[in-house]
Image (cartoon, rainbow, N blue to C red; front, side, top):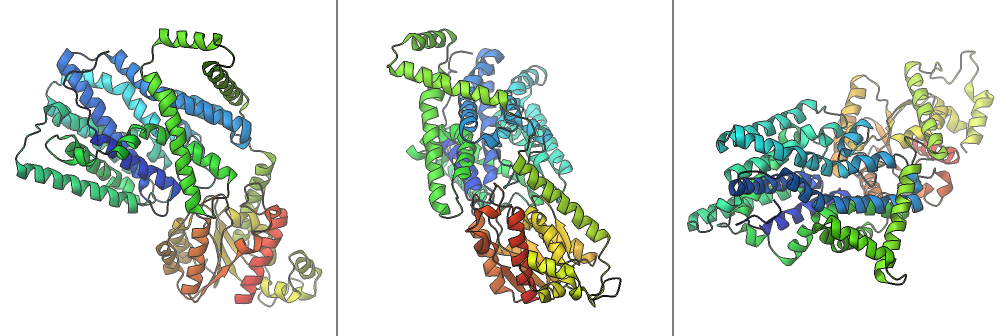
Length: 626
């Protein structure tokens, strides 16, 4: 179908829905503490896409009695592929020139994105959408484009089969809804509480229900068959339902956190149903929501929503790698939004719009004219620049290593793994020292040479070392704790370390309760959490509900200058130390902030030198307050 369909409606209000969805997604990444459910903008996109594609297929079938599948694929590729290729080329060239630490696995990311299987590639390579510290890459978000395009590939074929075999629209509708239910049930079955939900979050099979629900709507709510003139009471009812669905969606965007099991046990399905209702009301010409969601701002953003979504991650990742965004977070957020919109506008004007009228012959002629154009002409300069960027990107993709870690990362990983294994051995074989501070020979530890060497190493007094020998401490935290745990267990030989890479405070209550049930929570507790994401006052309260007021709890604040949650986490921890009498703050941020040489390249994990200072500070604070 090369020509435009007769009687086809362009529903401008859908640009408004796309705007709300993309704002939710962007703010979820830029302001996760405020837009906790913004990731739900993706199922909203899926519903709109499912409805529009199916509605157009239904119109084509009615008008021509067939579906030109080849033309369908061609139109989709013209709409989606140019901007994707431009983003991949631009990001790859930037990485090759300015951020070579991201070259690792670049080839796999680019190839899987070009063939729209990036969601499965990320699943198979153990990538996590929810690892806010180490897992983010400029291509993390391509998973959703892969899911959507995989649907575009198979849906027209499925549609034709349904129209020929089922024919009855009611049965077709029920069949699609049944498939959507199956997809949602599969998400619930495969989801495992307490484990990373990336598999069910990325999987085509577990996310298809949003697109299917949008497609099902088109069978019973075709845009060209809806009457513009309806009774006033019916209009009020439709407008009221539309308002209710919009308000519930906004509340979900603000409060439905990604770590809630409810999200995977039907929550995302309910959000998709709310989106279906809003799409249906907006599509109805008798309701007012199409007009209410239509304005110049929404139209501008909505038309560019694909580009905004596409360029968000590269801009954020590249910007935050070069700038310490923890200070002046709001200013940096504004700067990132401006950069995203600027890059999107360039792409929309010079790539997406021109290539919507893509024609092989015209494109070949244009390239030939650009090649032979005068050297100082705009066309020749643009041709040379584009060719150079593409060449650099291709070189980057070719030389990109696979699953490689540099010497710095290798040293950190080795340190963490060794400390983790050592802490496990300590738990299995507790020190044989008794509470009197004597060793097996009966000699006092305070008179041996070991305390003196430890005292000198960690800048502590002999009295500190002797006191630390007999103090039972439970240390619970993330990779930063693991990086410094060797020194801590040297100072506190009776310390039990429970650390895990990527651990967040929201994981704490359940895990601490398990330790409590096993009787492994000592009177003195050390918490090192906050490196991997923000948390609220209520989240910390849940931790304290488990710990109670019988333990002396020492909390270490964070040094994560390239992550926007650093200051929020530290402020929350400081407030907690004032609210709870048994909670004591260890100001690692203030102690280390002027010493970048204490850290590995990530400016988060203490290196060998930094670990000495890390352990010194913790030991002094614990021994002073214990």
